[in-house]
Amino acid sequence: MVIEVGKQDVEDEIKTRFPKGVDRVIVGSPPQSMLDGLKIIRFGGTITFFGLHFGGKSVISLDVNDTIFRKITFRPTYAEPAINFTISNRLLREGLIDAKALVTHTFPWGEEKETPGAIIDGSEPIIKAVMLPNR
Image (cartoon, rainbow, N blue to C red; front, side, top):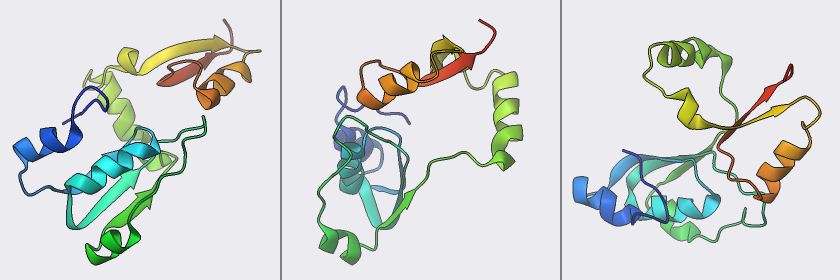
C-alpha cells in the first residue's frame, strides 16, 4: 500500500484497512511524515525511515514517553546494501518495478553539483536522478 502524503490522510487510509494499526511503517517521505507513522504503529512496532529533507525541515518534535511506553523502534537507513542489487535488477528486468516512473531527472557530466544541490534545496521535484556521463 502506497499513500501520498498531502493528498491522502495517512491515519484514515491505514485504519480503514487495518483498524488496530500496523506492525511496520516505512517512511520514504520527509521526516514530518514520521509523525503520521506514529499514529498508525502498534505497540512494539518498528518505523524504518530514509526520508530526508535538506530545506530546513529535517527536525521533528515527538513525545518520547509515548515511544518508550509503546516500545516503538526507530530504524534509520540510508544506503541500499549491495546484497540486494541482484533482487533489484531482477525486479527491473521482469518489469515488476517501473524504472521510468522512478527516474525523474537525468543530467550530464558537469552538472554533478547542480542536480544534487537542487535535491538538497528542494528547488526541483526530484525522485531519482541518474547521471548520463556521455550525454
